[in-house]
Amino acid sequence: MLDGLRQLFAPRPDPFADPQTKIPLGEVLSRNWFELWYQPKIELRSMRLVGAEALVRARHPTRGVVPPFYFLPDANEEDMLALTEQVVLTALGDWDIFNDYGVPMKFAVNVPVSAFVKLPIPRNAARSAAEGGELARHGAGSDRGPDHPRSRAGQ
Image 1 (tube, rainbow, N blue to C red):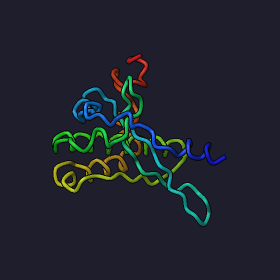
Image 2 (image 1 turned 180 degrees about the vertical axis):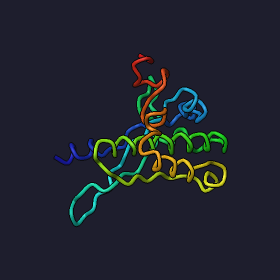
Image 3 (image 1 turned 90 degrees about the vertical axis):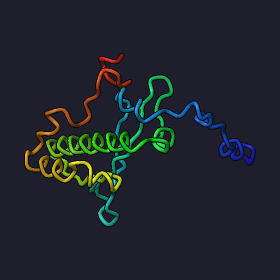
């Protein structure tokens, strides 16, 4: 039994340990490989789903899902702002979709402080709320471009 536990918890080689396996954020953005995963927020008293936090991942066509450690640390400010804008617009679009299906939720998105100064985040959020779901129908949301590994056009 102990051998089985040792094998289960034994360190495994990191498939991304080689610096060459890191992916430039600019490439993730230009090929539209980023996607959002939503970590649920649960109200403990009622065990009800009350919200979700958007977590960014990259879906590489040959390596599969790539955690942010492999594409965020070396990113320049311009690419970080571009990613932040895309993440916020996608989350707003997804929020609209959830609401359209009668599942009201609060979404959380982590953004750098500089994004609030340099990007129209408050305006986009207010516009999404005022338009009642129009962001999702006009290009924001979970739609993927032809280069995204999960898009039909990219297969």
